[in-house]
Image (cartoon, rainbow, N blue to C red):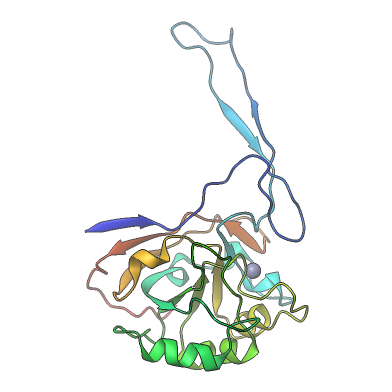
Length: 224
Ligand SMILES: [Zn+2]
């Protein structure tokens, strides 16, 4: 059994898209003198960052007014069988259904209804691609409940109407963005495990998703 980490490290000063741009990480709690030797106090950090920093989860209320916030999403919605679809090198501004449909047809293991689909869009020499409206609508038709991408966001950032986020989240298809190492998972089904922190009312959470390979047998797909 193999465990693969799909997250990027969170580093001081890294950019997170659109809203806040830095992640100050400051050491506090230097409690020297308050403890007895050999204890020299403890380390503790104040971390200030966007709830969409680094590899992160998008809750429905990220784009849908009145949608569920991250603390309202049960773990059963973010853990499940997953497959990776390779849609690299797309010669278009964004991935549309004309690219996605043949890419899924080439997959030796297809996405399950109720399962998870991870989009491998990024080659080492590029930044990957977001999806357009027709691709998002196709993902909804497939019946997957969560879509991940190794692009910084599910959308092409130039699409100001954000069809990827809008279509998926309107249909309660959850999103995880800025994944890494998806090329290591091609051609097999894995168990995707992603546990956003239950920040009350938040629209997202930095996450450290992993996959367990091979996917353990179980009562998949999930219904939650
Ligand atoms: Zn997003």
